Amino acid sequence: MTHHSHISDYSRYFNQRQKVYLVNMSAERNSDIYESLSGVVTSSGIDSLEIRITHSGHDTHVGEVGIATYKLTSEALGSGIQVLADLVGIVAGNIFQLRMHGTLEMFQRRSVSRVELSAHLFQLRGNFPLAFFRKEWKRVTDHLRNNGMLPGLVLQETLINLSAGGIGLTVDANNRPSPLSMFFVSLDGGLPVCALAETVWEQEMDEGVRCGFRFIHILKADQERINSCVSDLIRKSGGIPLDFKRNWVLVDKMVADGRKPE
Picture 1: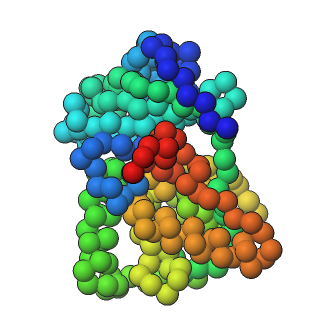
Picture 2: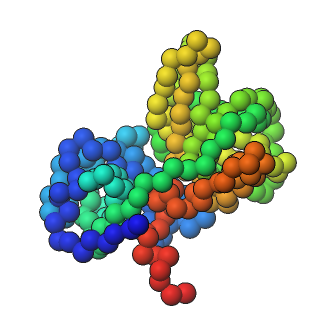
């Protein structure tokens, strides 16, 4: 069940050090791309919020001030919450100053369908800034669309855990992941899915380090491809897949958007 709260004071829903996901909702965004950031709250006011962005660097988003709008998604009072916010300033390169507005929506947190499978994969790692990875992602996806497979790209068969929201796999303990990665995953006989991801957790295992990654920059068409693959495998095993679009962290829309007349 989803609740809508028409309020003028948002501060009760955001506390210091609270984790927040930001989903790009700007009018000028490329609507074919799902784009997300993550951060933690450093201060909050009646309708204002400051969030330390995890992977942003100096000048990465400076051109978005006064233009960008994000959907802020988090948890409060035992429920998921989301609200729109305009980017009104950036401090010290990675502190987003945001002005919240409109309806705050509360919703039931939903998991997303995921499966273990063996797939051909390549992971580009490196301690590069987000701006570098975003530029490289655009170059690669443009090449894949216009010219097909990248020359020299070698994908290796790897056991992974996959969902529309991210990927999990085990890596060598001596080759730990960087904060950001770019994944190439072959799924359905077509061109590989290409997605930027952030490392969200690591766990020491006997066979290495088990890592979880969240997709933060991916074509919506590739989200759909992953979801179709995962759903088919779940159905074949007798299960019932979940609609990833009901997980509000993974879509660039508000609950109310689905209720507006066409």
